[in-house]
Image (cartoon, rainbow over all chains, first blue to last red; front, side):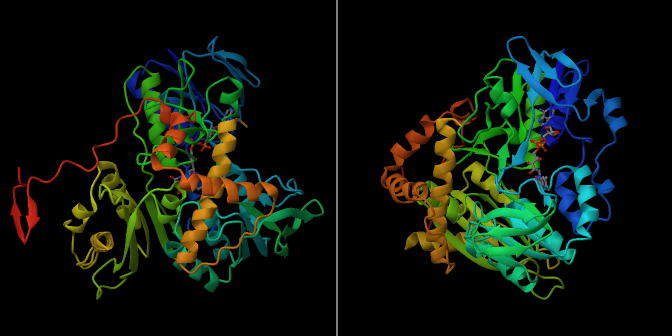
Length: 442
Length: 99
Ligand SMILES: Cc1cc2nc3c(=O)[nH]c(=O)nc-3n(C[C@H](O)[C@H](O)[C@H](O)COP(=O)(O)OP(=O)(O)OC[C@H]3O[C@@H](n4cnc5c(N)ncnc54)[C@H](O)[C@@H]3O)c2cc1C
């Protein structure tokens, strides 16, 4: 059996590895437009910020290791079209290539802001590691930068640029950073940290043009001109699903490829995984697109196993997320107040401010937990967290709680670890659950 | 762009902007954003208020009717709320729930 994977990111390589696990005799070919596979793009902002000394550290495996594993990766090679009826793809420089099973893992792009001057030098979309190496030396020459819209990756880049001593101006039509996923009270410490670090923020404003003579030297915004040698595009992720669309494969309202729990698309023998797809949300059922690398990897494995003749189902998602934003860790699960209000979902929330270790233990940090529950069933439907540490673990735990239908009463009576160096006597999740219970009685 | 993509993109943008305004105000955050175009006015002053007054059930059916992955086969969500605990706590004591 010949399995062809289009995409060498988390989803594509997850699919290739898992498929060979099921059928080691399968002929496995992976196509990628990039020069490399198997690196962590997630680490790029931290190399730019000099927390990690080299891009080499971001590679997870060598090209030879993939070859040995039986994965034939075709680098810098574009798949131009798919003929789903004939089970054939057209590959630039190779011509027609037959497949028995095809996995689409073509990923995402930043939404194109489509602005005048968009082809000037100095406009950076952080993604490919080879381009990142080139940009990294350019950063040494930059005095001031504009961040065009402030999604999650852009927030990490703000921190990186500040660490490099670059003056940063954030321009975003939204009212606060990452306003599509996070509530204003939760992101407030991050905003305060940025103000302290000298970051200028223009909320409710838009970039209207890039200007300069071949190379960027200023950015026009609705609030006036900002001098800048660098613009970071931080717009939302959009699915790279053009190849699927052209092949007549069904797309959903998000523009992502429609899949079922086996990651099967509308075309027979064609699977899809990662950020080019859309996956239903576990609580609302609304399809979501542009999740994370960990989602892409797990979906890729599901697609690969099914493509190779195995059986695996992927579940609707509850989307735990967490990240470093300046000096703070910030994260959440499923709904926050803003997103719940946007879809018109009934909720009662409760907030607790706590600490991450015993109050006397060195390195103790503040942490705020907000929980949202459905007043009808009393089930947890979402959470948001900001703190000095311990955010990721709580987000992961709360995602399982939402998925399992855990109620706010379960959380209000939860057991917790108390150990001075790693946890306080009062667990902030439990305290937030008590606050929700209290607000429900009102 | 298909109709469902056009609808999703715009409804998501404007419902979020409306929610940001409400939640922002509650938290003392000034939310700017005067309407910039006719399109802006339509989505803000006609679509968003209409969506908000629709009954929950109708909203869900409309969302479900849109093409997308949510209409494919997926594992069922766990029961909500979970089956009750075998005992209920009242006046500081755990008792079996009354039959
Ligand atoms: C700077 C940065 C920071 C990130 N931080 C995090 C993080 O902290 N946590 C996290 O979980 N995730 C993170 N991510 C991951 C990211 O947000 C995505 O979720 C993830 O990259 C999705 O993986 P994917 O395999 O679906 O797609 P992609 O990574 O976009 O890979 C797509 C692949 O498809 C190939 N391709 C596309 N079209 C064609 C074609 N026609 N022919 C051949 N090949 C093609 C591309 O060359 C590429 O190899 C980060 C990403 C970046 C860039």
